[in-house]
Length: 183
Image 1 (cartoon, rainbow, N blue to C red):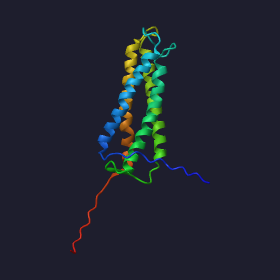
Image 2: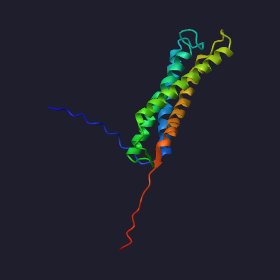
Image 3: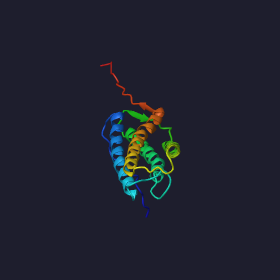
Image 4: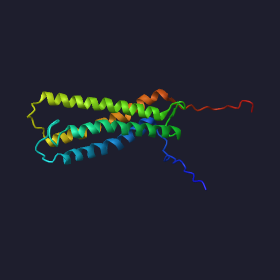
């Protein structure tokens, strides 16, 4: 007796334009990322009086670096998968080239974006550490707001940036009409 595992079919998507589809997905990503990253940052600072960039148990680098590395990976893979599924279901006005290896593109872009974002956030933390005195104490509430805002900005960027790169392999659907002149 052989067991056949059926491939899960993606949920049907309503017909829309690519811009509307991306705006809707962006709202789904931004609001939870801002809220949860703010709450996690606020709760992780045990003593709400102060925090530092790199020193101590409640430093800013412990929250921002993992977020800056993993958020681009998750968002890039998810948005590329959703856009290609929508194109296959003809829910958007574009098609994706059949010769494109989407998994290879997802992997390459997610690793590239996470490395760039992680390096950029790390350099901003080093610049902040260098510009402020090492005895300067940062307000934990303000830093939690900055972490939430950074999560929102990264969510917006990594909804549009992967699709912008995917557009090289996308083309518009054409509708052909056949006229019967012999009647």
